[in-house]
Image (tube, rainbow, N blue to C red; front, top):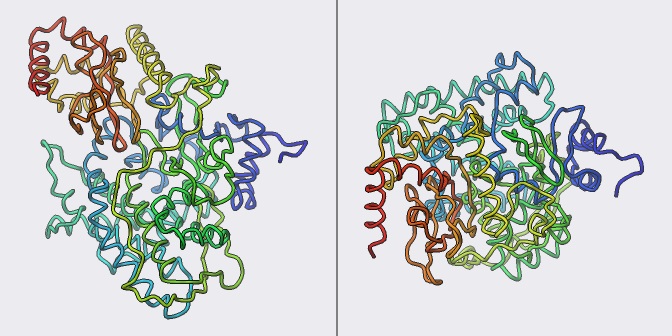
Length: 612
C-alpha cells in the first residue's frame, strides 16, 4: 500500500538510503512499482525499473549495455581510479561488452554447462553429507558456518584449483570487496574493499605463478597454459577472471542457502509439501531465488534512446533493473510475497539475462537442490534457535548475518535417503501474457523472444542499426572492438571464404543478442531477415515438427533463407542459454553480390551442411 505523500523519489531513497529499506526492500518495491514503475531518480541520477517484463526486456535488449568507467565515475567521482577495488572492475568479465566479454566467457563456459555440472553432483552430495554429520551430531548450529559457506567454496575451490587451506579467509575478503556493489558504500567500506582487493590480487598472482611452474588438472592451471588459436590470457586477465569465478562461486550461493532455509522455516506448510512430494525439489531453487534471492539489482547503460513502459530513456543513462522487485511483481506471479513450491516452472530474474546471464546458474541450482533435499531428508524438524536472524546492511547482494538452527534427525538411515530424480527434459516455462504483445505498443524494448512481436522488434532494430550506420552513426557502443568481432565471425565455417575486408563489413553492425532455453530464433515459414552466429549454447532444428539436428558454437542459424531469398526452412529453438551475433539480410546479400568468391564459398558451405 502507498501512503498519500509517497513519491517515487522518496521511496527509492528509502530503499537505498535507510537500513530499514535495505534490510526489508520488498514492501518498498511494491510501493515504487505502483507509483512509478519506470522511475528516474533526480537525487541519485539514475533510473530504476521494478516490473518483471521491463527488467527482463532490459537485460535482453542489446541497446542496454555496459559502460563501467562512466558508471563508476558517476557514483564515486573523477578520482575513482585511486581505489584498487574499483579499478579491478575494468578488466572483469562482469563489465566488458561484446566480443571482449564473449572471448573471456567462451574460455570458461563449458566448465559450467549442464553436462559438466551433472558430473559434479556425486561430489557435491558427498561434501554436503560430510558437512552435515557434525551439524546433526550437535543438534544444529549456525548453518552459514556449518554448510552454506564451506560447501560452495569447496566445490568452486576444487574446480578452480584453490588449495583447501587457502579458502577460509576469502569469506571475509569477498564480503568486504562486494561492498563496492552498493549504490552508496561508506568511506570505511570502500577502504576495506580496497584492502581486500590488494590481498586477493596478490594471492592469485602467487597462485598463477605456482600453476605455471607446476601444472595440474584444475581450471586455473588449464587457463594459465591455454593457447586457443594463438589467444592467450594476459596475467591481469587471468587474475581478474580467477578471483571473479572463485568469489561468484560461493558468495551468492552461501547467501541463498541462508535466505532460502529461512524462507522455508517461515512457510512450514510448503516445507511439508516438499517432504511429502520430493519430486518437486528440482524446481525449488528457482522459487527460493524468486522469493529472496541474493542479487537484487543489475546495472546497464543505454546506448540509444529506448522507450520502455511508455517512458523514453535517453541515450547514455544509467539504468538499474531491480531484480528483487521483478521477482515480486504481482502481474507476473500470483501471491508473489509467499513461497509456493507448486508454482509452475518460470524464469526468476536473479541470474540476470542477455549476454551477461550468470555462468554458474546450473551449478547454483544443483547445489541448492542438493542442500535442501539433504536437509529435509536428514532432519524431521528444522527450527530457528534463539532470536530471529538479521540481514546484513546490504541491498545489492542480500544475505543473513547468521542462521542459528535447532534440528532433530529422522529415524531413517542415510542409506534410505530420498533419491534425486533422473534428469529429464525440463518442464516448459510458464509465462503470463506480456503487455508488449497486447497491441498497446506501450513498451519499445524487446518483447517475448520467439513471438511475432519479437520478430517485428528484431527487424525494426536491425533496420534502425543499418540506417544509422549508413548515416555515419550507430547505437553500437564505441568501446566494442571490431577486430574481436571479426575474429568471432571468422570462426564460422560459413565465412571461411571471405577475406578480412569482407568479414569487417559483416562485423561493422553485427550485434550480440541472446536467447533463453525455449526461445525460437527462427520460425519455419517466416520471413528471413537476419542470421545468427552462435557463440555460446545449443539449439534444436526441427522441420515439420521433427528434430533434424542440434547446432551449437560456431554454427550459423538462418543463413539459408537469406541466401536463397526464401522463407525460413526450419524452426530453431534454444535448448540452453545462447549468445549469438546477428547479421542482417542487407549486409549478407550485399556481400555475396559484390564478391563471387564469398558467394561460392557460402553456397558450397550450405551444400555440405544441408546435403542430408
